[in-house]
Structure formats: structure tokens, C-alpha cells
Amino acid sequence: MNTQKFVSRRAALKGIGAVGVAVAALGQSTGGAATAAPDPGPALSASGARKLISERVLQTPLIDTHEHLLEEKERLQGASPPWVPCDDWALLFSHYLDSDFLTAGMPRADMDRFLSPKVDPLAKWQLIAPYWPAVRNTGYAQAVRISMRELYAVEDLTEQSVAAVQSGYEQTRRPGFYQQILQDRAKIESCQINRVMGEPFKQSDMPALLMYDLGIVGMFAGPDFNQYAPPTGIEVKALADWHRVIDWWFDRYAKYAVAVKSQNAYSRDIDYARVPAEEAEPVFRKTLQKEPVTDAERKRLEDHLFWYAVDRATAHNLPVKLHTGYYAGQNSMPLARLRLNADSAAELCRLAPDAQFVFMHICYPYYEELLSVAKHWTNAHVDMCWSWIINPVAAKDYLKKHIVTAPANKLLPFGGDYLHVEPVLGHAALARRGIAQALSELVEEGWLKLADALDLVDLIMHDNARRIFRLAQKTDALRQGSGNGNGAEAG
Image (cartoon, rainbow, N blue to C red; front, side, top):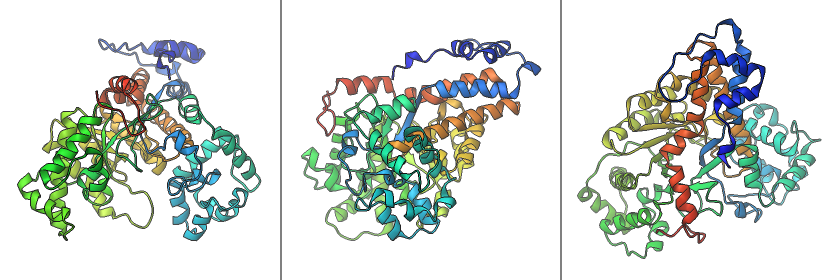
């Protein structure tokens, strides 16, 4: 996307029309010396302020800081379980929304049939119909409903509209549909992808649009010898050899990666201690020989290797993205452990003051605790990815509180967190709605001047991400790198 075609705030306000004239009384912030904005008084109504803010949020390019998207060419290959279980309209329900159906009581066998490529797409409605009224208003469902409306011109999912949804799916899923959905429709400047299938890093066929994290969880959890060692050609016989394997991945791909990412919080708390190599070495040897280890030993090795990877990331100026809070899926979440995440996040910041941590998903439902971490620790950032569909009201609440509590330059407001591209459009629409509502409410409640609210839009929607992840530099490197399907060659 050519971001230059998005005009300045002053020009945008002029273009809005009569409402734009009203904001002139507030003064204009140029980003230089601060100037006092006069009290707007009764000349500008609450609805007028909301219109200004909404227009600005809707026209501003958004950087998507977290997805799990497959490459477009992988989607175009058709059904390929487990990541593409079917190639019809039901696919839009397969990531996240399927969990709401299951927790609403839908039998697993019926969900398996719904997502099967062997079931007639038009017959699938009957499988979800009994549960649709119970889930249709959740954030997961709203993102899908918005996407179906915007992409397929279907206002509501019913037995009568399923044929139109299926036709729209078939007409949309064609070469170029990633750019159409992400850039043309959602006004997303670029997406950051965490690869959850296959290789830990991949160079996209669309490097200016899809930019990858380097996955590090297998570097320390397990560790995953089969995934990380073979590409390096290093024979792993000792802990020092595994350090060399980790070094190889950073030396080869750090130039192109936007960050490193770990979702290890799905299996433990993020309370990683600084364990020296001599204490981890005996456990590593036992693990290498496939000998049993205790939970305490496993934690000792994971902790050591976590910090080895994080220190390498920091040396390469790569932010460290960590899952916190809510779990995907159903019937498996240990809520008491999630409560510990924010305290552990603070300790990570203390142990590595030079590392830049990005704590993801607002640690939902414990977002007040994570907000205090962002306020207190210089190297803590909060990514609101996924939160707008977990609980859109809570996400709006977090955004309002962050703006008046912690520095705004530590906030990343959106990541769709999807495997499949279509629902990203709906999720982005929910995020834009929430951003506009949060800023409007802060103005209406007297916590912000309108001019200050408008000045925040560019900062939180794209400026922060561009700075934190050095996106201009990464884009140049990716465009210059030689793609071979498995990643760029380091230069």
C-alpha cells in the first residue's frame, strides 16, 4: 500500500466538510512544540467529535502485528488438513469460531462433519443451525459475519443465504485475494506472520505485505532437534552444539525477521530464570539421549535455552513476542496459571533491560495487571492482537485505560491472529470500531482534547509498529533478499 496517499490530519479534516470546520477551534498539533488547544465549548457536539475521530480511524492505514496466515499459494491449493480442513465457506468458521460452537454444546462429531471436505457445502448449515443463535454475537462470530457481509454481500447467515455465501467464497478465493482483502478492503499496510506449520522462518512471495517472525519456541521447549538442527548441518552432541544451532538461525534470518515469537505460555508460565549453562548441560544430555527428566529439570533446561535465544534476539535488535493470557480452544485452560503471566512479564523485563518485550493478547482477562507492567517497565510493550474478537468490550476498555495510564508509544492495537485471511477483514473492522469508540469516549468524558485524540491515531495504528519492528529496514532487506521458498539468504 502506498501510505503517501493517506493525507495529513489537517487535510483530512478539511476534506470531511462542515464538521471539519468545527475542529479548527481546537488548534492543530504539528508534532513540534506543544500548543494549548482551546476548549471546544458547545460549538462541537459529541456526535461531531465522534464523526471526526471515526473518519480519521477509518482512513488511516493499519499495521497488523500478528497473524498465522498461510501463504496465498498454499490457500489456493485447496483443502489440505489440518490447516485447511475444507475449501468452502465453512473454513471461515474453522479458526476460533469453532470453539464457540463447541462450548455452546455442538458435538465434536458434528463439527468434524461441518469442516469435512466430503460434506456438501450447502448441507453444512444444518449442522450449525441449532447453535448459531447462541454464538452469533460473540467477537469470534462478529468478525466472520462482517467478513461475509463485506466480501460476499450477505447480511446474515441463514439457510436461504448459504448458497450466496458459498458462491461468494468461490468467487473471492482467487489469485490476488490476499491483497484485495488485506490492503484494498481492510487498509492493512503489512502483516506480521508467525508460522505455526513447517519451518520456523519463511520468506513470503509477498514480502512487503507478509513479514515473518522467527519462531523460537522449538529452540528451548523440547528442544525440537528435528526441526532446527538438520538445516544447519550441525551435529548436536552437546549443549554447545545446540547453541551453535540457535546461532545459525539468527545469523541467517535475523536480518529479515521482524521479531521472534514464542507461544510457550500454552504449556507453562513465562517465569524463565537465568540458568547457567553448567546447570543446564546435564539435563540437555539426558534429553538428547531421550532419557526421562523431571519437571524441575525440564524447566531448568527450558529457562537456560529461552534466555540464550532471547539474548541472541536482543543482539540482533529483534523484539521478543510472548503469548500471555487466554488460550485458544476449549476445556483446557488453567486460569490460575494465566494470572501469573503479568508478574512473570515484569520479572522478564527486570532480568533483561536491553531486550524489548512485546506481551500479546493483553493478558486477557488480567489486562489491568499487564497495563501496570507497560506503565512501569521501559522495555514492555503491549500487543492487542486477538483481543478484539476474544472480548471487544474489554479490548476497548484496555485501550482507553492504556492511553491515560501508560505511554502511547508502547501500544500495538491490532493483530488478527488468523490462519485464514477472510476473517482478518472483519477483525480489523472490529478493531477500528473499538479504537474510534475508545478515543471518542475519552474525549466525551473529558480525559482528552479532540486534537489530542486525533493526534494519537497515526501513532497507535502504524507509527509504533514501524518503529518497534524497524519495518522500513526490514522491507528493504526482504525486497533485496533472494527468496527460495524456505527463507531469504543472508547477505
